[in-house]
Image 1 (cartoon, rainbow, N blue to C red):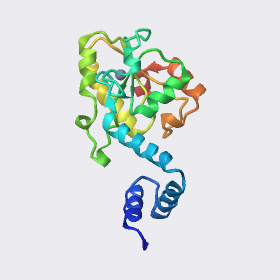
Image 2: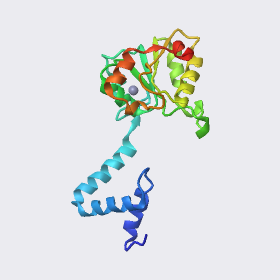
Image 3: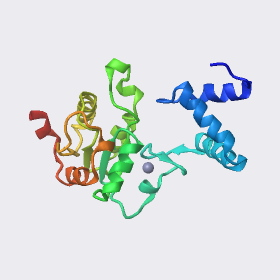
Image 4: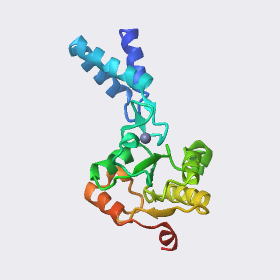
Length: 205
Ligand SMILES: [Zn+2]
């Protein structure tokens, strides 16, 4: 691709690093940004910069937040005794949309996946184990989706905490194997949380 402007070329180059955005799409988007009012484009640039530099991870659950402790963890009307273990913020958003869960979350930041070189130490697992050891948590709900990586991660965490007095459950398998949580419809996901099953029972099936 031959550019008449180095500035445009650089912008297209940066944009095309994003997943699913090829050079042609990046060019189309950049030409659109050039055509729209300057203020609007600068607002986008400002939002991106603020998101990247000012965003925090909740010190308690690792969810993306604007404060040190996220709104969910800080909410006094939610029970601290039940923790739903999820992969990332998209799962928190999906479960929150169901309005079926009033406990807290713990965001792992991924799943154990030896194929991709992701081990337990690359994830936010140890703080969860520490939380359980402290004794206020009565139940952990595994909500990682029914993939092999999800199952491996659930089992790893289960092994770490099985000696402590905590109930473990997993969301009901109304969700077919391989489906990720964020694509599951709200009613199915809401039901699968309410009708969750003991984790040990899921191991036998
Ligand atoms: Zn939090």
